[in-house]
Image (tube, rainbow over all chains, first blue to last red; front, side, top):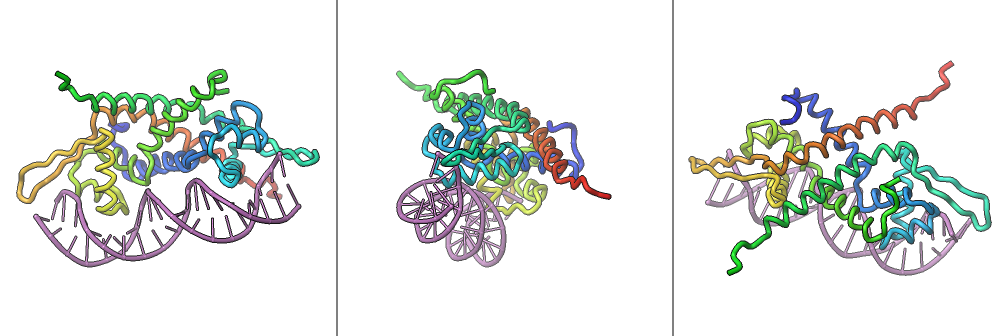
Length: 123
Length: 123
DNA sequence: CCGTATCCGTGAGGATACTG
DNA sequence: CAGTATCCTCACGGATACGG
């Protein structure tokens, strides 16, 4: 059912693309951070507060990763003490359909799993 | 930019759906296996051969996971020695758009990253 | 405020050998 | 053929403490 029989190397190429995408958005926090950046207030402490349970270490690390992948832009303001703003790049916007699709399927899947849990015998 | 400001609990719900989806398709082999099942020849050894570098241990474990998630159906045939067929369920088909979206974004992202690697100064 | 350094537990996944 | 059992490694991520 996947686009009419691909040659092995072609198929590998497609798989690589999927893997690339997953590698970028995987990890416990990546998507939460991106969504948090879409919501406003993007200073470090703000983000940390907005994402329950994340530690500064993780937030810092993940932000660096995202910056590497050009999904986040880091801006330092010369205040005292310094303030830093993180913003989602236009490239991050292109992730929107992906996240939507994942969300849709996540909901569908939840329903599917729950419907099978039903125990039919009640009386 | 994410659907007009969501309340915190609502947002959490959306995130949970995304996380659910990622949890199912994550792991090094899940998608490769699903795609392999879409390609035909679905006996254990066949799948193992079709997926480079996978070990029997991993294939066995991942197939069990997928079966739990109702993405794969396992059928045992009473031959000698036994043969077992794994097939993708209709529910697995619903993953197709998700995988497509991931593939598309993976390719887009690759281009984005490569274009920035360009060193403009040549002469 | 904005992080980094260090230490550590856990689990994903690989290698290899073995069973029904 | 279709797996399981065992052992091992290493990266993910949490906790805590500290520096600019």
